[in-house]
Length: 130
Image 1 (cartoon, rainbow, N blue to C red):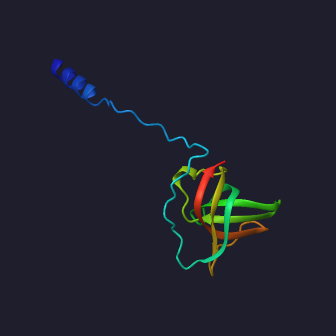
Image 2: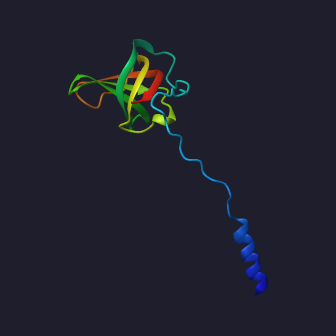
Image 3: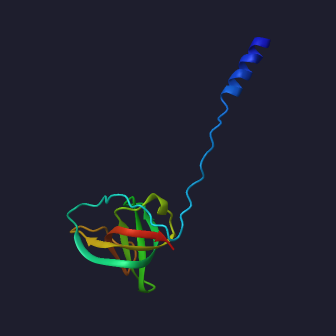
């Protein structure tokens, strides 16, 4: 009996972890974020380049892609950029961001989900939390 208790104590004490879990990194608003490589096809056609554009992050379940939605001056006029290189730090729906990048089109673009929505692929060159 004493031997069993001793074995249990040794196992219990030996299994305790002394490591600590680092908290998730906090993004500073002005700190640049390292962007991953683009996952979009190389056959895309450049549509427009933008700088210091403000938008909001979303996610399309049907495409398994994050996007940045930019409102173009009307309640039902928006440009949805399906992001080809979304950094993990910003994969949060409804996160406001400021970004630079290039919009691209393809022969076969996904269908818009809302009236007044335009769809493009977006390759980011710079992005930060707003």
